[in-house]
Image (cartoon, rainbow, N blue to C red; front, side):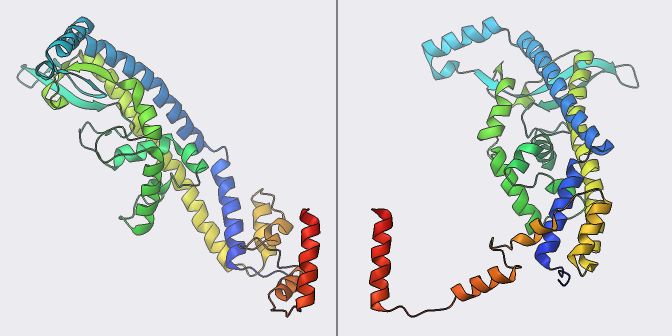
Length: 318
């Protein structure tokens, strides 16, 4: 038997199998990413509980209940209670160079796509956090949650836009600054709190202590660190895959690619790789290839043969 020559399909099969192994390996970078995600969960619990204390201190539960009673009684003029998941927290415990008190405040958004730098406006940072947080769920949908990390140094392009849009749709992202649907809505639901005043949160900075403010900053930093560690991990995979592509492109025979996989500690079944092509047909076996080609021929069938075939069919279904 002659050696099986490499082709684009076999290269892609080998590449995807080896890349999958790269992504599953227990490396320091992957472990750092997983730990960063666990830390985000811990900090979300801490920060959301603290936010509830701070917000309810500013807007007591009994006052909220009273205003809702007035709204029910008087209608729209008393509609001043709203739920929100993002807040301006501020403290006045700092001093400037002259010893005068200074106000320190920032925007803290508990939503899945919340900004990571204190701005109330959306940016790619929030999207990067969302895909890093829900990476496994997006991979299970055959999407690419690593697209931001893979394209980190590239400008926007059709490939990036397509993959980002697909991930955003799967996450339930909305351009209208609401909860959207699906994972987005589910993620945001626990973090809504009652506030008094329906204007933008910028106009109602909520007082907190310096210690509380620093705890909110620690939570937001944990979200940023998840994005950073996701980027570092994917960078290592991209570098490995770049070299892998170069090698596979240079190989003329499938046996060379399988030898490479073996040297990397990856077991590859040659028969499985060559068993099917993109149409799902076994074409490398001469007998199967011959049968497939014969089946493509137009064959004349007599009227009697057609009647006989019909009778045989009817017997099988009756």
